[in-house]
Image (cartoon, one colour):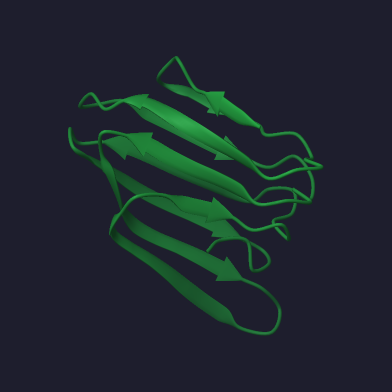
Length: 111
């Protein structure tokens, strides 16, 4: 399933999935902002792919076993893992050709 996010500056809450999905961000424009937050365990991988831009930033997987950082530097996309639980979030701000991202998960929620 593919979904095109057509608006900017809003929150999106992906529902629990039975199949892997890809969210395509609209064409990059400076100042665009998105926040994506899970409302339950995702169940499947959710891939976020920007259109005409790359992803740079840091995600924190803050699970009980260990805290781990997932860095992206000029990446084509990033993923919520199938284990991402309620409250896993990412914020994205567009600087033109780059989406600057940060996020946090209480489990291994990013890859």
